[in-house]
Structures are given as structure tokens and as C-alpha cells.
Amino acid sequence: MEIQQGYPDFHALPTYGAVHGIAVMGLVHRAMADFLPNFQGHNHVHGENFLELKKAYPIPNGREEIKLETTAKVVDIVDRRSGVLVFVDIETVEEGTIDVLCVNQWGGFVMKVPTAGANTTPIQRGPRTTLYPTLTRAPDKITAHKTSPEQAALYRAASGYLNPLHIDPETAKAAGFPAPILTGTCPLGMGVRHVVDAFAGGDGRRFKSVKCRLSKPIYGALGQVVRTEMWREEGGRRILYRQVVRNGEREKIVIGMAAVDLWEEGGAVKP
Image (cartoon, rainbow, N blue to C red):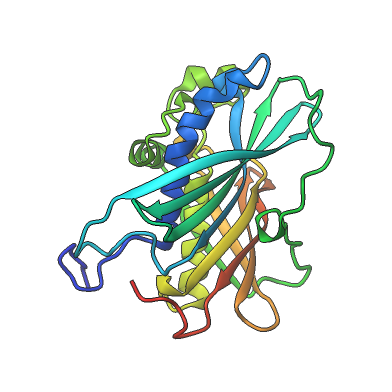
């Protein structure tokens, strides 16, 4: 069945909450030269992400409009030998209220900057910094998605995070990549959708949070196929997952140490 925007249950995917984080990170990205020596914009890539919805969806489902306000704060800078990992807390509220709709934590890896003064290990901050081990048994579910060059451009345009690394081949080469890379939130959205489809019957209202590490780039321009491997933890409402791409005979993990937490069935806040 084709669902039009006027359909009563039309809604954004639950990872739309990450868009607010991407948008404000455009401002943080432009300010990084103020506190990171030798900062070059094309050397900043998405390294980790945490997203939690305080309500089932961070925006209404099209039947009304609200204004949102998103703020960002740098909370940690960690030594990664060849650069630093910058953690940014991001909070989105309904404008004029303290009604929190969603929170993000963005971990941005900035290559080729001095690491003097950075922390040697991340400050532990609960679910925002927790990374999950991949289980050794066979996955409970596997889903695949073929990427395309348009995906990076669409995510870039929707969020306002206009880093040319995601669309310009020359910028990608300057950063050491053979082609433009997908924004990290693009495979993040793929993974969450695969989990929700596989373990929540496609009901996005059951999505509560996601945490993942973006380990390797994905090249949408090359049409890479991303495979999401998923494991249900005992208890049923936490799904561990990783995402893998194949290059010839070799495979590489592009998103790992990841988990999606679901609300219990029927327990989500309704949009």
C-alpha cells in the first residue's frame, strides 16, 4: 500500500531525531578551528553516535507544526594518536519550553591535529559512551541495502551539514578517501530501520535509542551493499547489530559495537 503524506499514520522515521544533531554540528564544525590547532574541515568525520528519543517521534506526524530549538556543547576531547575524538552533547526541545524531545551525542574524529591536552580515555557517561560487543553466534536476522550517490546528497541537504567531503571527489581525495563518503547518520538510519523492521514489526514508535561506532567509511558513489547483522539480547528489547560491506573477497565492518533499545510492545509514547 502506498502511503501519502495525508495518510493518518504518516510519520518520519525515528532516526529523524539525528537530523537536529547533524544540523547543529554544522555550526560546531565551523567553530572547531577556534579550539583545535591545524584544523581542516575535510579531516573531520563522524566517529560515534548516540540518539535517544524522549518521545516516540521528535516531531509531530504532519498534522500540526511546532518550532524546535537545538543546542550543542563540547563535553570531551580524547586522544586517538592520529587525531582527536570530539564528543558533543546535543539537546532538542520545543521552542520556549524545557520539554526535551530528543538527545544526541556526536563523536567526531578529527584527523591530523595535535593531541596534547586531550584526555587519554573517554569520560564514561552511561549509555552515551557505552559500546556493545558483537556476539559470536550466528546473527538472528540479516538485512541488506544497496547504497547510491544520491543518499549522501539528500542527507547533506536535509540536515544543512554541508561538508563537501560527502559529495565532492576532490575533497574526498584530499582527506585520503578514494570517493565521497556517506554521512554517518545515513547507515545509522539504515541499521535502525532494519532492526525495527526485523524485531518491532516495522513500528517505529517502539524505537527508544541507538548507540554505535562508525568504524569505516561507506562509499555511496560506488554503490556498496551494506549488510546489517542483528542479534536479540536475552530479554528481547535490546538488539545488538553491526553493518558490513564486502570489497571483493574481503569484508569490513563499517558500523560496529552497536545496539538499539526498544520500548516494550505497546509501551511507546504515541506521536
